[in-house]
Length: 67
Image (cartoon, rainbow, N blue to C red; front, side):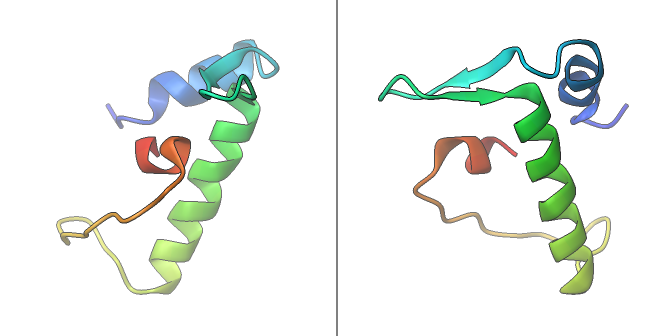
């Protein structure tokens, strides 16, 4: 199973449900988190990243780190 599958399943079932609540009270929905996964996967493939490659993550935005 892909680690993103539970997020994607929830995005299909309840796209507007809160997936993440930020400290400032703003909400990231499952639909938004799913779109972020797609955008990141597309960008990484464009950069040549393939299964088995290692990466370093640097971000100030928690939900993007989670992705």
